[in-house]
Length: 340
Image (tube, rainbow, N blue to C red; front, side, top):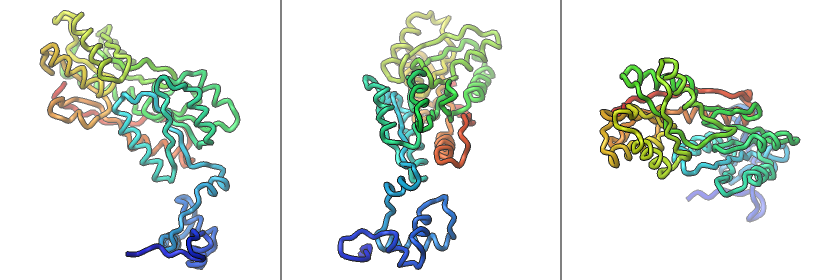
């Protein structure tokens, strides 16, 4: 069994000076070896890292923060934990952050937590950036905090931003909805409906807007809206049941587009099991996100897959300063299955 060797007196933690003495370089060179953006020969980096591993040395991130004036921490503010898509979003984002040596501080701002206090909490930790992963951020809160000196930059992932002060990295709503709608139009659907999620404020989704615009341009209007009001099973179930109960069979939508896959799964179950409809013969369904469960035979759901890995990587590039801050829309992928 190999045990890391430590220099100096027993029990003392190894330092950069110890590694420098072991490898014949300066302690400043040792410090650079642990930074991915530092200029150092690859052979020297490998030799220093190997020596550090033998000695059990790890750089002091708190000390590095003092010298770089960064904390290597990014606050993630989440307020819709009922949305199962949050887990793959968090997985992609935290993986991208950790590859850069950054640490995510997760702050739960779901109700009844006070959003103002949550954002103050993030500020007090002197984080390098704040990433919004929710739906109900009010304009006045975001504007007030960003006007303060030295406030960290604000980003929103997988949603659009209606504020110039919030940089958005999201899936292209215009392109994705056009691809979805063109697919539906080609299949002959002419009575579309849209199930929406929670009403949005500063961070928005343009999916319903683009969906309605497509059908309106082709003389199909209005598009029936099924407002769920939240990304959860009960809300989606009630919205679908209300619509089907109130709408005569010959006037029902022939295809229902849902704001995300989570809503679609519930809407499909209600239509099939509570009302006896066949999919896609009686009613077709389309989701959004590209959730793993969409491929299950029980749903066989047509969906639009968001490029989460690319979105998270680009966001982190902006946080660390390798890419200029600017809102970006990325292309995803339409996956056509049996539900449509």
